Structure formats: C-alpha cells, structure tokens
Length: 455
Ligand code: SAH
Image 1: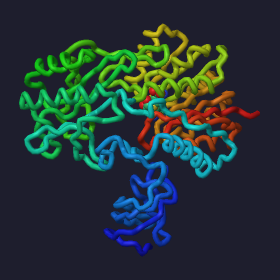
Image 2: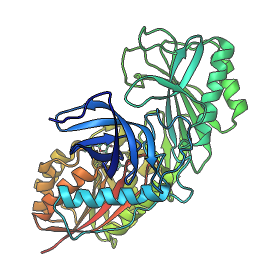
Image 3: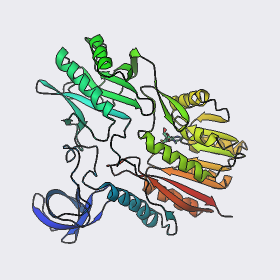
Image 4: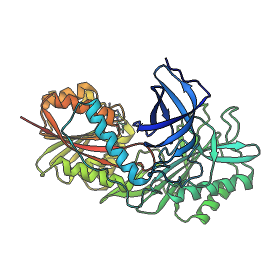
C-alpha cells in the first residue's frame, strides 16, 4: 500500500509512457499515471485516485517541459474524450506509436527479432482526416449544445470546430444548430428523455466531395424539416443525401432501427484506390480514407500474391481488403460475422465488376474449420480482427491448414503480440511489421504484419 494521499499535490518526474499515451512515473516508489504528461517532464500533479497498485494524477503545472510538447490546436483538448495526444508533436506521436508496437511484441509476445518499421504518418500532420462524425446534441439552459462528450462522461462540450474532422462535418453541424435556434427545435435530454434531436451524424466521400447528413431524432417527425433541407443544401451544395433516423429508446446506442431518406441520393460514393464504394447511413467504412489506402496497399504487398493463389480475407467487413487482394489472386473468400456487411460486400464486388471473390457470413472461428473440413484451403490468409484479436480455434485451424503466408492487420498491439506468439510457437515466423497512423492525435495505432511459414 502506498503512502501517497488522494487530493494532495506532489511533484514527480515522468519517466515513461503508457500504451494509451499517459505519462507514467513514481512517487515514493508507487506508480502514478498522468493524462497529458510527457516522458522527461517534471510536473506537479494532484492525486485524484489511489488504487492498490497504482494511482492517477491530474496535471496541475509543468515545471520542466519536454521538447516534444506543443500547444494543442483545439481549445477543448484538455476535456474532450476525442484526442489524447494533442500536446505531443506529430513526429513524437509517430515515434511513440512505433515504440508501443515494439514493446508489445517484446514484452507481451516475447518476440525479439521482428523488424518493426517506422510508423507511416500523414503528410499534412493528420488534421481534417475523419470522414465520419457523430455529434451528440443536447440543451444547455435555453441554448442548444452540440459537440463531443467530455472524457469519461456524457457532458457535451459545446464547440464549433474539431480539427480532426473533415471541415464539412463542422459546417453541417453549425447549419443544424442555426436551424434549431431559428425554429425552436430542442436538443435531447438524456436525463428526462425529452427534446427531439439526439445526434447529428455526417459522412463524407473524401474523393467525391459528397456529404451525407443523418439527423437522429427522438420522435416520429421533425417540425420544419423542409426548412432544414433548404438550409443544408443552400449552405452546402456538397450535401447529396439527408436522412432522419428514429431513435426513441432510452439508450446510449446512437442509431434506432428506422432510417428515412428525406432528400437526395440513397448513398454517397467514395473510392479507396481504384475501387468504388457506396456508403449508406449505417454501413461500416474505415474513417481515415487516405491512410486506409496506405494500409491496404501494404497488406497487398505483404501478401506476396502472384495471381494463382486462393486467399482468405477474414473479418472482411464490407469486403474492402478482399477487393484489393482480388487484383492479384485466383480466388478470394471473405468471411465476416455481420450479415448486413456481407450484403454490402457482395454489392461492392458487383459495382466494381470483381467476379473472383465470394463472401460468407459467419464467425471466422466456425466458418474456417468448416471450410477446412470441406477441403477448401488458402495459400495466403489475411486477418483483420477487432480489438480482442483472434479466437484460438481459428489460429489452430490456420496452423493445421498451413498457408504459406499470413498477413495480420491489427488495431491492438497487445492481442497482436499474443496471436503472433501462438503462430510463432506453431511453425510461423513474423518477419516484418509496418505500423500505419490511421488516427493522428489519438493513442491508437494500426499495424500490418507479414508472417511466413518456416518449414
Ligand atoms: N477488414 C475490414 C473490417 C475490419 S473491422 C476493413 O478493413 O474494413 C473487424 C471486423 O470483424 C468487423 O467488421 C466485425 O464485424 C468483424 N468480426 C468481429 N468478430 C468476428 C468473428 N468472430 N468472425 C468474423 N468477423 C468478425
């Protein structure tokens, strides 16, 4: 048990960084995590929590600043739950992310000899990159409030700019704000369940300049809805599609089950590489289209395909990676658990006139053992699981099936390390890792790994 006391201030040296991007140091030999502190800094912190094995300090005052410290570009960065690394230079963020990957592989995976390349960052330091925004809407006194939730809470920070969103998203939101104020339409109150507009969701076709706006309402109809449509399309000719989504449930889930198009096209279009995708209000699409192309190109390169191979794309979503791989494979099987995503994936293959891919709905850990028993084998397997990584049943089946190469795309270095360790114990060697910065100014890192069969 530690000697440090809650609500007391201490001066401490930040000697490292957690994988989430908090500064870490020791007070009286007791570990303390501090949001928005950087390695090498000396800071005064107020202890706000003391657990058994660690404490949490709030940054009060920086006595010695790191040379990597910069002024955040967003005035809300200290409170907002969105970005956690805005006080760190972009160069330092990229180094931090490379390091997280190296450390995870070494410490959690006991994998020493893998080449981890430098993280590929964005050219413009990664502002305005997000193609999808979900702004909560509420009431603050008599006024409308909209923005993002504060860190670890549902308090809405009322703001009019977000540096990582595409600027169109901010413009849509401010237009809806003006409409609400002009027309007396109220924002939703989570506490009482009163008020109408709950969320404003925007989607941007990065390469087509098309915008979709979805207004999530707590009711069946939106008063003065034609006025909103007029305001949006005259303010922004880029708005090509407007939906209402009905969500009257007392829930944290953003969307309800019913969506109604009230203006324009059913979908907006975007491209990744040469492939075209139609995006509807609920469909999954990677949020950083520029870096997605970088990531997929790397996955294609690491797959080492020559045109004669059978390939599995597991956890395929709407089939984006499958289409990339189809360019150099004989046949691609995409497997994904969400049925609606598989419907989109089949449509995407059709739109792009790709006929050597087949999509199967189901859990990878069930579908692949079944296919293996039926005699369908892959020469190369690409996996892109959610944060919890792969089920061991799947990994075991892959080991039995003996594909010559596995390309692992991961958004969580910890589960990546665990799964690569399993493969390393069973006849595979991870040869090269390429981290890609899909989420600048946040602590998240994505990587793609080339894994080779060794006997
Ligand atoms: N490769 C896609 C999506 C990756 S996100 C892309 O780049 O766009 C991970 C996907 O795994 C999600 O679409 C999720 O629905 C799916 N998923 C989660 N668990 C799964 C499982 N057990 N089997 C198959 N797919 C699963």
